[in-house]
Each structure stands twice: as structure tokens, then as C-alpha cells.
Image 1 (cartoon, helix red, strand yellow):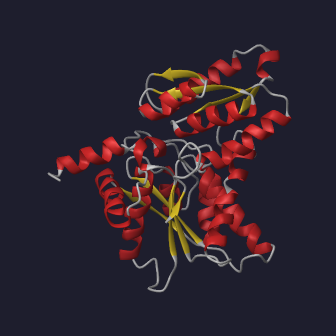
Image 2 (cartoon, helix red, strand yellow; image 1 turned 60 degrees about the horizontal axis):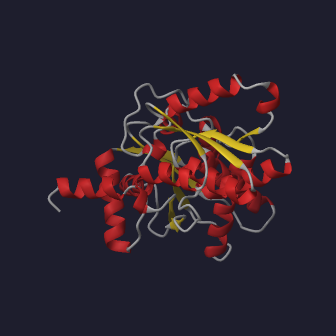
Length: 302
């Protein structure tokens, strides 16, 4: 398990937002602005504060309490939008369009794929992974996919290390998504470009992105790597997050639960050889989702 829970705000998103904040500072912008499912907003508020910038964050009402509370704690200007991520994104886009021209220049876009900086920062996931494996490539990496920035950045990092001769070869990448919102997995399986998911419905708020900005780059990365996608139901991913906690002592995000459940499904389908090195990416700390996992266990009488 590549564990990203130790980042400053507890998720892999910090890697991208650290680069975005530095780019904004160098551009003399004064505000990081973005719509977010939650984690990106918390990270943006933290790194904006660190860089001496303001932050303007649009979050859906369903975002978890910790995300919203910490955006406030870091001094972020938070707009809670009734509904889901697409509602927050629409509000962000509308308010940005209504800004006077002078103010618009002060808003530095921090959302995934609004600039090259966020997914560039994600390359360092692979840099550390290769170093942890003594400069060898794993055979496969199972990645929870929401906006698509993490899997795209991971592939870019792997490809560049291979081209530079720092690591021999690249891993197969497998996208894991909840079956209630799986536009990237559906596109990988169909051979088509990703289409917006019409009725998103999953307990994994961070992965409920029905029209991901990086959907096509994510699909292209997975195909180029020789991997595939897997969609799992909410019950399986919650049970898998609990299983990881009970057997490995790691408090992983429910997004990682999707990766774990997906990896077991892929193994059952023969995607891995018995001697493969398979890495699961834990994108964040489990304490943001503890109530959801605990409710699932209580429902099972545990």
C-alpha cells in the first residue's frame, strides 16, 4: 500500500496543491479558487495560507464535516452549495464568469486540469513509490479515480522515469471507481471516450465526480499502461477499507477501499500473476470517513 495519509492535510491532493500554490505565488495572484468534492478545498486552503494567499472554495453540501471545518480553520472563504460536486462546479464557473476583469486575474485556478500544475505535482507519488521499491517498477498499481489527476500524474511520472533510464519499465495502471459513479472505468471497458455519468450515487464523496475534468487523460493513461478498470459497489469498498484496517493496522480512506475491493476482483479475474508486485494507492486518511465505515460495520452487527 502506498500510503498518502501522512500528507499535511491527510490526502494525496496535497501534492498537487503545493505546486499550484507556488505557481500562484510566482504569478502574483492573490487567491486560489476551485470547486471541490472536499479534500482539494481543504488542501487549497492550507497551502494558500502557507503561501500568503487567499482561498475561495466551492464545496457541495454533502462534503464531509472535517473538510468544511478545516477550510474555515485555514482561513478559506468557503461557499457551501446545495447538492453535489457538479452543483458546486457550476456555481464556481458562474461566479468566475461574473467577476470584473481585474478581479478575475487575481483568481488562480486550482481545480484539477484547470492548469498543468496540479497533475504535475502528482508525479511525485510515483517518484516515491519507485524509490521505496529500490528503483524498480511495480507490476501493477490500483488507483482510486475521481477527477483523474492522480492516475494521469502517476503515469506521467512513470513514463518519464522510464525514458530517463532511472527505472526500467512502467507499471500497469488499474482504475478503481464505485459502480455508482464510474465514467472512467466505463470508458476503458467500452473503448470510447468518457461520458458524463447521468445519476451519480455513492458514499465515496471524493470519487463522486460524474464528469471528470481529467477523464480522457486518465483513460488514455490506463490504456497506454496496459491496465484496465474495475467498478465495485459501496458495500464491498466499505468492507474492504475495514479489512485493511483490521489486518494491516492502516486507517485508509474509503477511496482506498475501492482500490482494495477492485484489486481482489482483478485478482479473481486473473489480472495479476502470482509473483506480481501489486500496489494499492491509499489516497487519504481514514478519519475523514470513519463514520461511514463504522456505520457499515454496525449494520453488519460488528
